[in-house]
Image 1 (cartoon, rainbow, N blue to C red):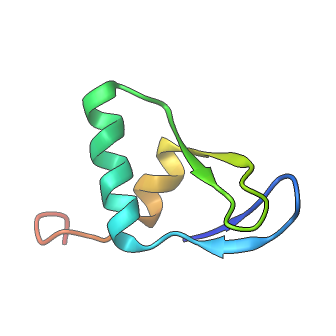
Image 2 (image 1 turned 180 degrees about the horizontal axis):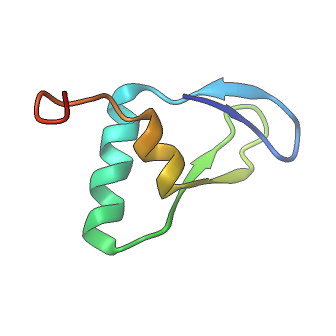
Image 3 (image 1 turned 90 degrees about the horizontal axis):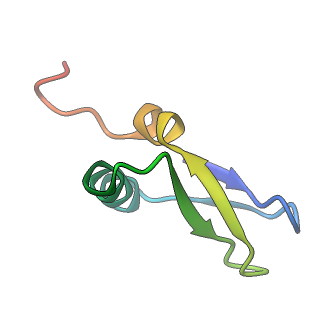
Length: 63
């Protein structure tokens, strides 16, 4: 999943493992977004739950 920082405009990727972790954490806490820090400027960027679900790897149940 590609993310573009809102402050410095740097593009970076989230790995599949990080996406899966974020989804689990949001389901436990009933959250609506996941905070991702830009590796360049350390600014926090919000990623919505819907964006994470679209980018999540598919499981065998969904196929």
